[in-house]
Every structure is written in C-alpha cells, then in structure tokens.
Length: 145
Image (cartoon, rainbow, N blue to C red; front, top):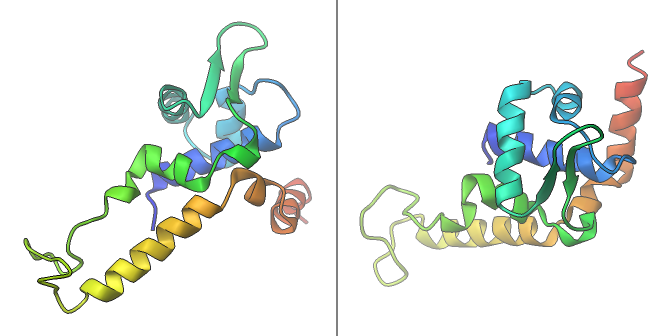
C-alpha cells in the first residue's frame, strides 16, 4: 500500500528511533536496511526538509529524529513521501465520483481509505520500533542461524 521509497523512509526512521547514538550516518542506516547509500542520503535529506529528522555535518554527525518516537506517526513519515492523504480519486477511475454521484466502489473505497489513514495516524514510530515483534526481528538479524 505504500511505495518502496516510503518503506525505506519508514525503516530509516525506525533505525534512528532504535539507535542509542545521538546521530547515525546515512551509510550505517543504508547498510542496516539494505538501501543504496546515495539514495538513502537523499531520502533522509527530504525527511529533514519535512522536519522529521535533523541533519548534522562533520565528525560525529549524521541524522537524528527531531521529536520523540512517540510523537511521530507512521502517517508523518509516509505522507512526506507518498502523500496518501490526497487519495481522493475514484477507485474505478471515473472523472466524477462523489457521495452524490458514486461509482460502484465509492462507499467501500471511502471506508477502506479512511480506516487505512486512521491506522497510519494512530500508529507511532515508538509503537513499531519498540514492539515485541520488532525486537524479535532485530534478534533474528543479529543471529541469522
């Protein structure tokens, strides 16, 4: 439901949330999440322009979150890349589709879209980064066998 770029952004933000270091370099994040370093660097700069991460140059620099993980929602991250809140178009591709002139999928699509956006809005980075499932995933990466 989200683009690969938004997924990389989400994974990068999760890495920053879980890091014990004040700043983490884009190369380190890229290696952990399996993303090309230059691509991730540009993506992190985009997140910095959106106010989600802070960038610091020089030795000991890198990226950090601008807010606590409990104060950043998944929607904040995904919206900065995919603009999902703008998904207003007709599911069936009609030019004119509304509650007054609905396509056969209109009411179902509105309900699904609204539930999806609400889930993104109510889920914080903290919810994901520090969940039991996340800890298990990190342990599996650390101990592949």
